Each structure stands twice: as C-alpha cells, then as structure tokens.
Image 1 (cartoon, rainbow, N blue to C red):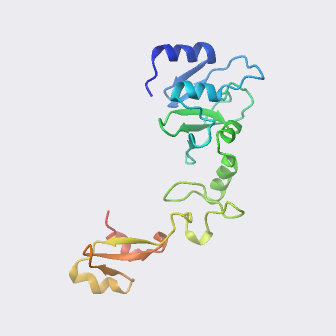
Image 2 (image 1 turned 90 degrees about the vertical axis):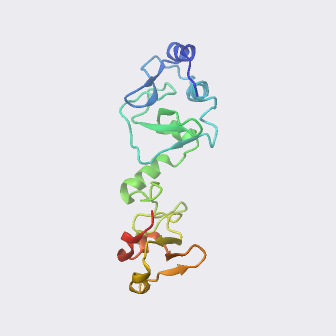
Image 3 (image 1 turned 30 degrees about the vertical axis):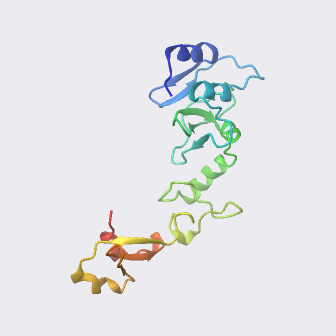
Length: 200
C-alpha cells in the first residue's frame, strides 16, 4: 500500500508510530498510554487498509524471534518482548507484544515458539515442531519435518539409461508418461545415494 506523507504525519502525531528502517517494521515510540486505548487495529487499518485483528488478516514468521523493545504498536508498555506480525496482503510488518499477536488470531504463538526452541523447526516450511498434545504436527523419527511436509511424494531423478540398473535397488521407477526416473516416498526417507540425483 502507498503510504503518503499526510498519513505518515498523522501516524506520528496521533499515535507516535513511525516506520523503523533498520527493523523494517512499523514501531511505536514511548508515549503516555491511556489504559482504555488499544490502537493496534486502528493503526494497522490506516497503514494496510485492514484491521490486523480480524482473524486471517495477519501471520507470523516463526523463524524470526523477539526484537528489542517493549512498547507494542498498540501503545501499551507492558510487553517484555516484541515480535514481528505481518499483514498477509501487503507484507507490512508491525512490532507487537505476544498478547497482541494472540488477539490478532495466533493464540498459540508463544507456546509454538517454545516448542520450536525445544524440538526445532520443520526443514521445509519452517513451522515449529510440536510432538505432543492435540496440536501435534511431527514425530521424532521424521527428522525435523512436519507431518504435512512428510507426506509421500514422487521425487524425480537424473538417471542415465546406462545407470538405471545401478539405482533400481533403491526403489527407483520409470514414469513412461513424462519419461523420467523417480523415487516415491517421504522426503526424509530418500536414500542418500539418490540425493545427488534429485532434479531441481
């Protein structure tokens, strides 16, 4: 979204909000906070055209951890850490506290970060790996890949006609429709001997 000078001035004067270039995010300067004020939805709507508190309008990148600062974009001074919250359509980034991220439709954000710190993150899609409970999305034997990314797939291989018999023992097959050799299975189970043959 095109942010004009009038809007930038309004954000600064009314909400004490500005774009921080080193952080590549919208931030809020320290200012007097009135307990009943809660400006996250208002500020994000001015910048993106949508209230980021509406479910489905925002997302977080779990590969990014906390950012220095304690004043959430909403204006409250109670956050101990700030995190990056993105608007889906515009990719505008806002530095917000964990409670605001929960209000923006990510109720398990902090728990997911804790799981990621303990179990790691999916090598494919970068989400935190959760190994227990209702939200379980991985198993230890998956080798840092979530269940969604660990579904069986066909991996096409660069195998010459002369070498076809050499690799058949690893379960390679010929697809006559596309005229290519492939291996079928979960990505983390691909035999090491076939990894250099993967088609890009």
